[in-house]
Image (cartoon, rainbow, N blue to C red; front, top):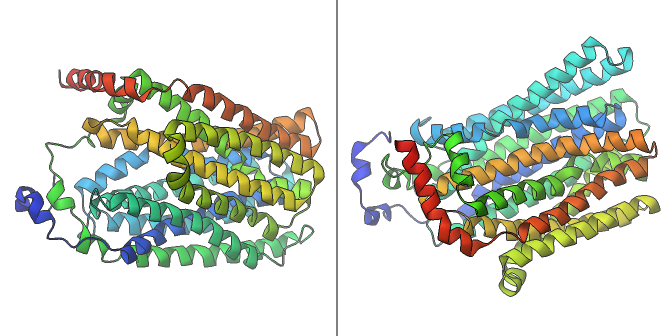
Length: 477
């Protein structure tokens, strides 16, 4: 492994401690990057989706399909992770990639919204003509580039968290950084709502365009500044990468096909892999349709529908913060995850009921509870994931779990748009069309519980080591 200093690879673990330990203030500073990612997710899945589906009347499948492209390019995460390991930028292994990726995805976000206006204009003028399809394709390409830039920054950042922490303080760092992601969603909702406050349901498209453009100039610029504050100087001062890494004990050079074989070598990891896909798709199908739901069924303005993310984010934050202390110790990891899935299914029923009452307050309350259920699921599922990760190939397992979830998020966004369009075709009544999306999610959550019952950690620990060793040995033949 190229580290720029051959003698570094011979340093002892004791010498590794010569680097200062990361403090609480620096942990929160690093969390500012994740906070920025939360804010950016609000722009793509809280503003652009609403504008396309509700104001510009783009079919939900087309809108969701274009947006989801940033998730479908997530396999590039593996490549950027390996690049940051082997090829330093600006004298550091991680920080340079984080900066370049952040500069790109904040810039691309503004370009993407300009393409949205071209798509809407073409759709209004010529319907689904070749020109309109062209702009839809350009939008999908823009979100693909956005996803690649996101991978280029977020994966090296995750690796940086490992580099600067030790086993005893890493859980605290991860907890703080993950919580800051939820804080970013809440802050993004508040800021976006404030900047779009003057927009009503009957606002002329020109005024809407000017306000949204301003939002996509100001907020990404803030996110870029947060990235700099979060990361400048941290790697140089705290990173233990040079003393921990050597080419003989790494599994990050394993290719994608081998990673999949490692994952499916044990029956239990295959079952959990399937559970993770079903659970993630079911949990996030509403991402692309919730804001249009608020606009079309409840008559909420854009500034009001962006606030829906704040309720979901607050619920998730409370769920993540409390579950590890209050629920997991009493119920265990597996039963905690089951509880979260069942609660999510119930909350989706409440979201459906809110549509028939047309009361925004009930929708907000239901989303708060749904976020709480999401936090319970997240905590339980991550804990289970770590139990179902073999130490011999930890990097491969963690990378593959993350890849599975990212692909599932992309599929969930597309599925939400497709089911909404199907509902419109079958029923023609907005509340029933959206209810079909939420009902599908609830069924998926129950299916996830059924799959989770088949997960047996004891069986995994007994059989996985031999199965993985056989795969690895086969690769060497």
